[in-house]
Length: 124
Ligand code: DGP
Image 1 (cartoon, rainbow, N blue to C red):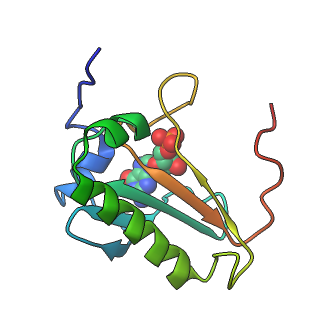
Image 2 (cartoon, protein in one colour):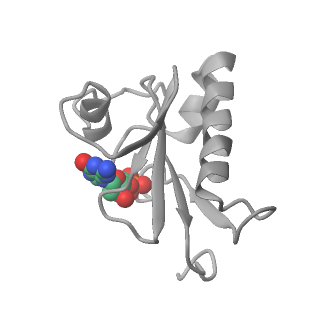
């Protein structure tokens, strides 16, 4: 079944400039901003500017240019935050998808969490 993108989701509104955000990096195809409900000292959301619902949707249908731009942006953010393990204390990336993944916003996003020990991956 093909994905249907809801262009009224909160990140679509952020991308259209209808809702403010705390941008930390923007490229041609990617936007990164701080999560409004941070769960770690650094909690950044990285989103493609294109209309993709989940990580698998993005991986399947985004262009090579969009995919490279997204991951290079992610790498640059890790470097700028100083959290990559070769220079800092590490981080976790999470992308929730669908009902079991407990995805609240149906626009693909990567959570970068860093700045404190994050415990084991899952609590339940
Ligand atoms: P998820 O459950 O993976 O879909 O996470 C959605 C995240 O989006 C959640 O951590 C809170 C964040 N969030 C929701 N609304 C806004 C907003 O208006 N601005 C920002 N910066 N983050 C938001």
